[in-house]
Length: 359
Image 1 (cartoon, one colour):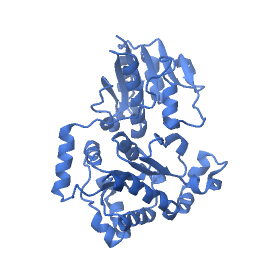
Image 2 (cartoon, helix red, strand yellow):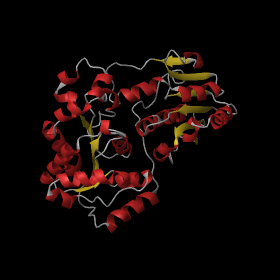
Image 3 (cartoon, rainbow, N blue to C red):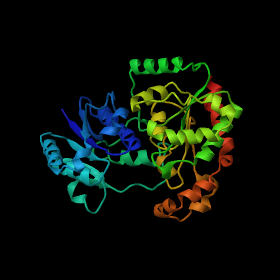
Image 4 (cartoon, rainbow, N blue to C red):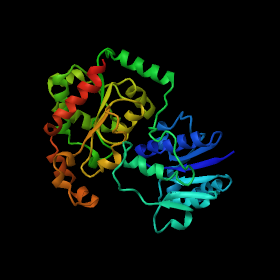
């Protein structure tokens, strides 16, 4: 029986995206076992995934307690893997790959770690398929193992239990939310300020939606962000306030996912939440941060239910011939250029075509 190890640490969107590797391995190697190394804060998006046999948590304290990290690395030597696929490709995962016992070790090409791996690949910059460049580059790592991928358009999926969905439905009903009316999840914050659309612009988006459609709105936020939520609520119109149920939110990531699964659409900052919406089959309208590559992370755009806007769609000259470093320096200025009126037509078209039309 073959056993494979996939390593993908850090961000939720990355961890979710890399689950497709596990699914492909299971399809092409029936009976194989797949182990997956992730950070604990991303566990919710892989729980219950039938293509992952063992989730291995890379704990926060490993960064501070070298003895514990070394014990973790030594434990990897006890496994007999057919192959290691290191998607993360940084120092921690390099060390895991080095200690893991496997005749095939695969990762991306980097000068400082190439001696660890038997196969390395450059990130492709070619025009991406409908999967998006982030997904195309992940599938590259399967080449030493799979000659021709079956079902190459597989999308990441999140698996919720019936009980989780039922509890979320009860929360909605207890808050007197009418489930026969479109329910929209708004991703009002990104994972950092550099990935968060300005709140005054987000307020304009909420007003635009509520002025044109009768919808109920939930916010994706954490209790620690309450002050920012209150600031946003001060900016929206009185009509919009009536549509928003800010008291309904997930107290854990799994609770958020269960609530999201009952929504007819997601609108907001591109990032982990938007990728989770896609993985739940919820129609998605993402607003990209100006410094993020739309070509890389506009995944599964072949599906009309997944749409996105980027400053470069409207002002390509503002980003032309600039490095990621330069774009990061100009995030505030570039966000100010990215006014909601620029994509009003695209946003309302999404709401009409992917949400209202299916009611």
